[in-house]
Length: 167
Image 1 (spheres, helix red, strand yellow):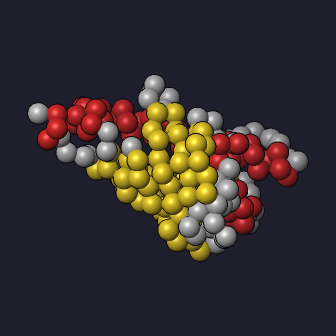
Image 2: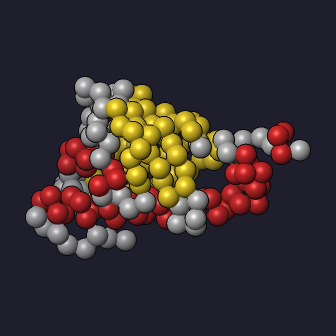
Image 3: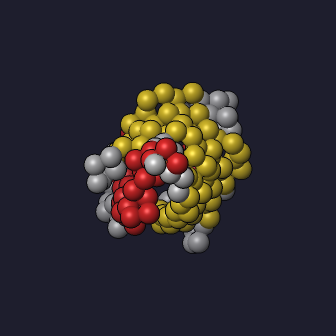
């Protein structure tokens, strides 16, 4: 029975508000060395393969969920338009793609819109997905809030204006 369980699709969105200009945010988010684990709690780099520029950069990252499970994801930058947009292809425990768009709603600020279109690939996640989907979405939201706080803190430390990390 479990062998016939289908992958469950998820459309997950997050919006980050960062008190820094888009280029500063891009320099961190679009770093081909994918240095996210330095500032994003719960993220671990297992393998990183930077490319010249951003497009083609790849990494295997482990994202530790706040509810006790971890996802191992292979991310590849499929396309990038610095400092505005990046498309990530993902494989591993999730399969699909993500789009990240950076805009400047006001001078010195960045809105980061993140949209993932993925399917679960782990048998247990597919089996419990019909019941656990809300918990998975909440875990994703918590992980993304951690990323936003980490980015805000990291940029404040880089600029020497360490202040509140925000929501």
